[in-house]
Image 1 (tube, rainbow, N blue to C red):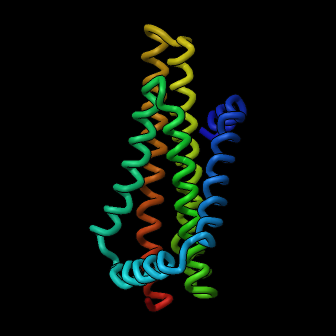
Image 2 (cartoon, one colour):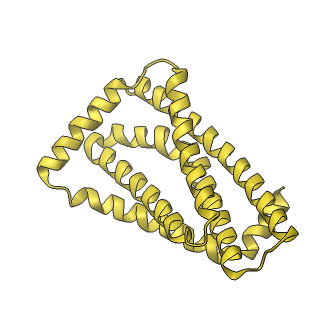
Length: 199
């Protein structure tokens, strides 16, 4: 499995490098966007964040974990569906950029609002689960882009198309399961972080 992944990334490294740059650009724009907020918008978001933290469960809540996992699965399913279309690639890149933007904005805003406590919260509830989620996102987006290019270039037809479609679906499913696991981790560490920092 590791060798297959290594050769796959090595073969399509340009696509994955591009996706990584798009994600990073989204994160940078998101972080910079915090500084561009008007005072009244920043105050509204501060109230919303505090309410969100206060409303989070303090004990392990199955429904909450399921919702986090479901959200990640929906994102991955959307990327998979876009890969089945010839014109879906720009939207895949837009999703990757948006996820980077949300991540960068959220981390920067929490750090600005909660200072040192925010740093601990960011590490525990965002960065740790992202170690799994970000690779899943980039791999899913890469597979969708590659399959979409195959369709666009007309390189696959008949039995070959069925084989590629099967591999695409199987790989996407495995990656989606990883994203679901990342969602559960994020939910779990959000609860732990909420209790640890006493919000």
